[in-house]
Length: 219
Image (cartoon, rainbow, N blue to C red):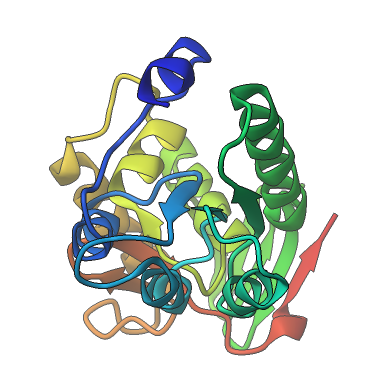
């Protein structure tokens, strides 16, 4: 599977157990998880529940179990798809593509406008207003804010933020990211030392909190 996925231009990160997978999620959030039900230690079903508790990353279950109740159980646990072994790699690749398309569609709506008690952001006009007037954001501050608001209420990993805003050659330059986050908090938070909106997810990344779903308009 690793060879086929790599040949198909996917970057592969392996975990030998459910515990290892959850630890990896604390470091880097992948685009998709392929999860076997039969794992040492924490089984795949419990691993799926734990993944869903902390992330909305798509999960495809791989299993030799063909019973309908097994499929219902993992789908109820939060899995996005279920592939029964043995399977053709072409089928798995097609399911991966479909799952990624659905994930992009579900969260792909670009933020259009965000209106909070003390903040009004028009992403189309690239305007940020606070009670005391307009706020100037640098291009990187604005793009970072756009990305976090686009994934509001969900953690976004350091690596994903760096690669999306700075470019694909970045990923480990955490100090660059911290500097821009500090600057952004200074500009949009009432009390930057006690942020309400732009929160730190320890060992993972950052999360933008929406006080109300009505605050955000998407295209």
